[in-house]
Every structure is written in structure tokens, then in C-alpha cells.
Image (cartoon, rainbow, N blue to C red; front, side):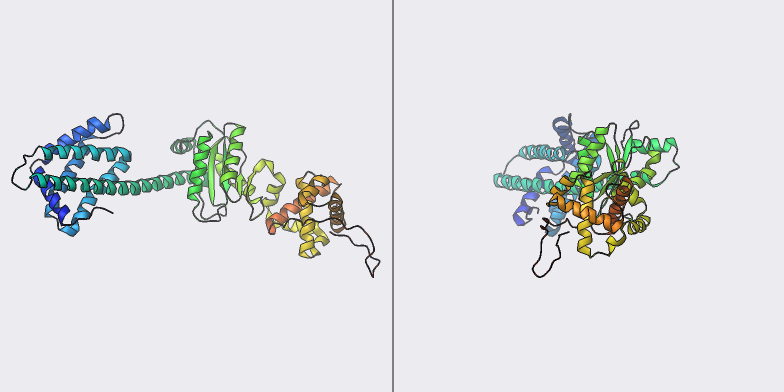
Amino acid sequence: MGPDWDGGLSAGVALLASALTGRRDELAEATADRIMAEVAVGRAPLVRHRLLDQCRAHIDAVLRLPRVPGPEQAGTVQAVAAAHGRAGAAEGIALAVLLDSYRVGFRVLWEAVEQVDLGEGPLDRDGLIRAASAMGSLHAAWAQSLTQAYHTAAEREIVARERERSALVGAVLDGPGRDAGELWDLVEALRLPHDSPYVVVAAEVLTAGPEEKIRVVENRLTRAGVPSAWRLLPDSHAGAAGIAAVRRAAHVDAVTEVLSAVWDHRVGISPRIDTLDRARRALRFAKLAMAAAPRGSGGVTVFGQAPVAVLAASAPDVMAEVAEAIWGSLNRLPDHERAVLVGTLRAWLACAGSTDAAAKVLFCHPNTVRYRLNKITELTGRSVTDPRAVTELSLAVQADSLTRLPDRPAPPARPVIPGKRRGSTRRQRTI
């Protein structure tokens, strides 16, 4: 909100204008010189002729205000300051420098007012007090309007730069056939190094407003010494894509760590490529790595570190048929029993075939894990002691991740001690 343009303030502005009448050019020159001397040196790329034009515009606004109808005075004040704020943002001048310019400029104007002889006319001692009050209100109104306009213009400039940068990333990722000169220009415009290997990232977007997370990722990677460039892919199931320069293996680790900490959904990272003319192919591999993780999960999958999962993701329709053949009669079990067995196999595979480790993950006895694995062998005809059968079962587990919702963890269980149930001679075991 600006000052309240009541009758008292309007009268003060009229007194202020009367003290400055006929001195516009003189005061504009003096103000520009003082700002260049006290504010611009070593701090901002102020150009004197543009600064002089802005000083004239502000003094003109003060001189014109008494002739502007009361309801329109606030708009007149805001307009000149907003134009100043937009121009400063466009020229890359810091907001603090612009506000300091106002401070210096108002001091110059007030010194000019103080030089006016006090007499019996309008600018007597009381008039001087009212003029000082009006100047303070003008300063506050101009500073507020300038700040608002500056922030608005700066935000638009950021959005425009991000759109331009996104388009450049798209030009790299979307098509082959660019010659070396075009790629050099694109890399230069993206401010990426020319002599570095790269990885391409595909990140799933399931919620609105990913732009801020992309900024966070890019800023954190920059601090980790990993230049990167990003864009949104609104027509793809992988909603965002990025290119990161990874000179060392540690840089790939940094990309993984940052994305794991910031991104909520699935992320895939391609193999390293030496030149960006292979970026389109790398994006395809990154998308496959992303799709290798179960739907609805999070986490980062690096292409070369999950070959079985990536292979399953590369042909999900084929893998669904293959899995159907591998699971056999296991697929005819009730859903809960099936989920318990598949979940146990998944945990056993994740624990590198250790029954004891899988039992700890599943909060059950190792004998329960062995019983379930034997049950899987019985239903599928594939033994977990046969390396080829384990490979096939591993593919079937990965296919489940692509075609089904993630299995619920198997519930805690203890093996029931075999024994007689009242009224029956059948032995009971839990799955």
C-alpha cells in the first residue's frame, strides 16, 4: 500500500513542487552526478545518460502532481517508480543499488528545498514541515512501487531464461543429425563444459509444480561441482530430463545422492556418454532405468547397476508373457498367498540369496523363508539352487514390478510347530 493521498499530503506535495519549479534540468544533473559518485562506483553498471533520464522523469512527476486530480496522484507516483524498477531489473542492476539511488536523490532534492528563502509566502516554516512530510511519503511510495515492479520483472526474466534454457536442452535431447558446430554452440549456450563426459537423467513427475525442485537439484549439483541443464517433458511419462557433466565417477555419485534427497518419484540415469550427439539415445536408456523401478516407488536407478531390471523394463509386454510362463501355477494362488511368496523371493534376491538376511528383513524365522522358497520351487518347477532358474525367477520378479502394484511386505510370521489339531490328524504350517 502507498501513502494516503489526503488533502494534507496533496498540499505538502504542492509546496514541494513550488520549491522545485523551474529547476528540473539543474536538479536532474545534480542528482545524476551525486548518484554516480556515491552509489555507482564499484557497485553497479549505471549509465549516466539513462540515469539522467530517470532523474528528469521523477522530478517531472513531482512538478506535475499538483495538477493531477487527487484520485490519480497515487497512480502517477507508482508509474514512474515502477518504470524505474523494470528498467533496473532488465539492466541487471541490484535492487539495493536502486534503493540507494533514491536515498541519494531525495537528499539532493531536499537540499534544494532548504535553500529556498523562508518568508511570509507559502513556503514558510510550517510549509517547510509539510513539504518535508510530503517528501518522506513520496520516498516511501516510490521505494515500494520500485521494489514490487523490480521483483515482478526479475521473476519474469528468470522464467524467460529458464524457458530458453529448456529449449536448448530440448534441442540437444530431441534429435540427432546436428553437426559439431551446432553442438558446440548449444553446449556453450548451456554453459556446460566441452571436454567432459555426460549422463542424461529422466525423472518421473506425478505432482504439479516440479520447476522449483528442478532449481534445487541444479543448484545443489552446481555446489557439488557438477554443471547441469534441465527441461520439463510434458508429453512424456518421464516428466523431466537433465544433462549433467560428470568428469569423475564421484560426480555420478553426486548426481545420485542429490536426486535421491530431492526427488520424490522414480529417476533413471543413463550410461556415460562422451559427446552430446548421443544424448537422444542416452535419454532412452535413462527412461528405461527409471521404468525399471516399481511403479509408485521412488529412488534412483543407474542404468549399468540394475541390468536385470532394465532388461525387464525394455520390453514390458514381452516380460509379462515370460513371467506368466515362469510363475506357472503360483499365479493361481489367492492374491494374498501369491504376494507373500513373491515378496519373500524378492527379499531373498535383494539379500544376495541369504536366507538368514531375508528372514531379518521379513521379521520371520529362517525356516519360514526356506519353506516359502520350497513352495515357489514346487509351484514353478524352478529351484533356487539352480543359477539359471534363479535368473528366470529374478526376471519374473522384475516383470511383477512393472505390471502389478508393489507387493506388500510379507507379514511377520513364525513357523507353526507341526502337531495335531483337535479333531484332525493334518499337520499345519504357515506360508
